[in-house]
Length: 232
Picture: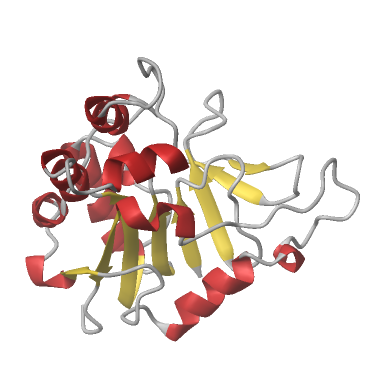
């Protein structure tokens, strides 16, 4: 089983996944909701509080571009809980905007097109006309989208350590990286297929695929895996 935390209302995966997010804010944490658009299920969750699952419940905890919405101490709570609900040998898959890429892009903006390329893919909000300045693009990732904290690898490792996770368990990765278990890669690929919407017939909109390991986000993203020892 795979727990996806932070898929929002639109990116809910089908069979084999438990989707959880902070949407449906009028409902208490732990309530299971059915999305009227797709028939897929989502658990109302606050990722900065204890997760409503028993220890060892999941093979993988997957979170894509959610971690930047949490301050470090809340992030540590999430990692501690995600680690707890993993079975021995399971892993946390975490992706988030990479602070180092943004700062390196800013410092070397005279010869590095990272920020300009990013602005073409994701036009920043609040810009002072076109083309957006380098400062606008950097501030956009810090200040918009309800982001709370932008991490680099060192900060993720430190947050994991505060959560009680050994630093050696935290590894850099890549999009669909070779370090990921084959079963997880296959699950990600299956999730992108419309046929995984088990209760789709007769719903109010066409099937929606679950878009994970998003290629459009690869240039800006820090990819991390955290592995729980098999003997734990």
